[in-house]
Length: 120
Length: 108
Image (cartoon, rainbow over all chains, first blue to last red; front, side, top):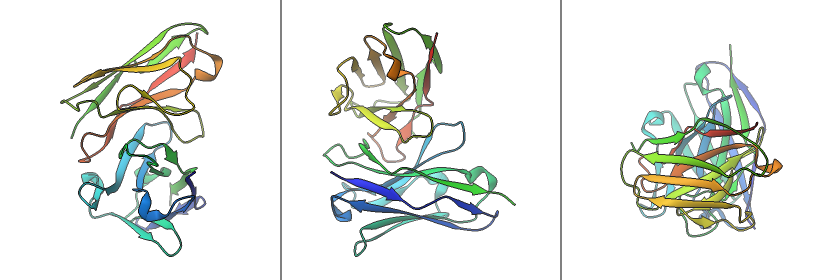
């Protein structure tokens, strides 16, 4: 059974960067295509990007292009999402999510979420 | 981008009611549609994938149907544990993956 455990809450100033981690257990990181989804307070779910197995590369939502980087450290089975040039609108809960089966893009496994607050 | 439009945004219902939520895609997504349930302070939980396939452990009162651009999630007999927010999501295209705006199911 795949489990995803995320790093703790962060408070950042506008213009700074944040790096959220997501540790995989039960599978290896190379077996599960990792994605990141965020949710602003009281709002809906927004996909930021993730690994597309058909393309063999990480895809980013256009609105985050140039500001977001998703990486993976297979030695520690940990995925990372770094978001730069933070602004107040980036205040949100950030989730890592993946698919344990064959339905790439339908996420049956989620991390617990990491609250990122951007405030001066 | 493929836009996903859910309706209604809020739904008031009673225990035992049959509830239907609609999700429309701005272009055909074949049957690459998932439904999630989310409770306050929790991560979303996958209910249905590929339009109509029930995720393991999800009660059979949940069902999904549709194809192309129009999809529905039905709860045949609403239970107290079902009061939550529901999201549809298309995964036909990663450019980008998109979610509906959500439907909050409230107690009438």
